[in-house]
Length: 515
Image: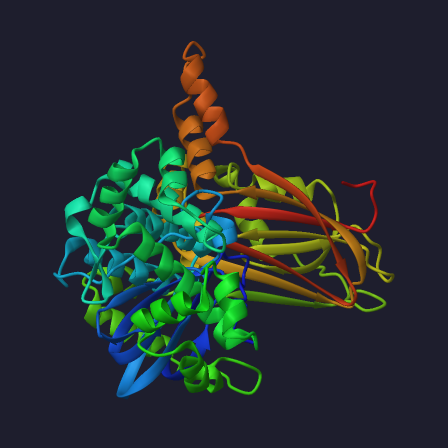
């Protein structure tokens, strides 16, 4: 099988596996992978070279590079961060076929510490899955890529392996030129490729181009081309039954003897010997990766020890228990509630009129109450008894303490103080069983900043002459509205998450006349 397909979940263009690795057979994937050893050590075989990575080491597996892991005999904890290049290449033209090297002379280099910090933050966000964590993870990954492009695409060959070259750091012109050159070589290695052809593309003399390649990589143009061809041949050796003559031709060598010579130069053995040695060690249906995922507690403890400050930033983020509301419908929805909903005691106070706007919108519909609590209200326009084909769901983010305060405050200044200072997270999950069909869904959402802006403007209205300030204030005080649809066979779930005082009114309808 050899090629491993990475599954990206939760609509995120990244995938994170943090595990104790026993053995991970030889494989490759089309995406980039960042390896961070949080504890212990692990043996990484990357192409022709074998590394022993220890605690604190970071290694970049560039796209389509053959690699494998095995245990050193001691426990390990390895974070494997996989990046979907089909997503991130929309923002960075030079990601595919790029070559990032983190092997540095100084392990305490500041740029390495930045990488570790970003990796730790991504891991903590994924573990805690707080409010809006998806956007934070994507943002941190952009910062990770920016760091790689800034500090880790400069390399040189020393003692048979690539090392990070600090002297050219910051030379963006050189980095861009090298990337274009290597990218072109990877795309065209299978045919006859000359230094003159690339020199013409770069508008450089052959001599100067040869000097640039040698100075930047430690290899001559021909040696670099042979390296690329040999590297690409590894997939054909282990992933196909092709004869070495066919592989030599397919990878651009003019004769088998040249292919054998260069393969032995890099891999230290004949291609057929290499095939015999490793053909039984590639990932397949029969030979799978063996690792044990680490628990969140283990990962957090490792991050606390490894990266200063990051764990402390997240340690206090204890999420509130989600509010789960189950509604069983089937043929007839449950009997309507006759009592006054607890939320009405809060929202019908004049002092709370600004935050009560979504509640008042729902109240004007004069619908039957299906379920209610202090911070939620679910209604329907359908008559009871009878089939239910519409739901209105209103949720507010505030806890019991805030509820008590909203029952007592006497002025808008008090309301503003409560909204400004409340920053807790909450998750609502409304699960409706027995609800089937295609539903149109309208979501009317007000965030904390919007409530704050509305209250501030009510207390201190802007002068009409200040057009720009009025315009900005109107934008800041607007709710967001989105429309979608969902087809349910028996169950339909609506999820809302907030950080800080917010509200969302969700309208679901089978019919088209309401939305």
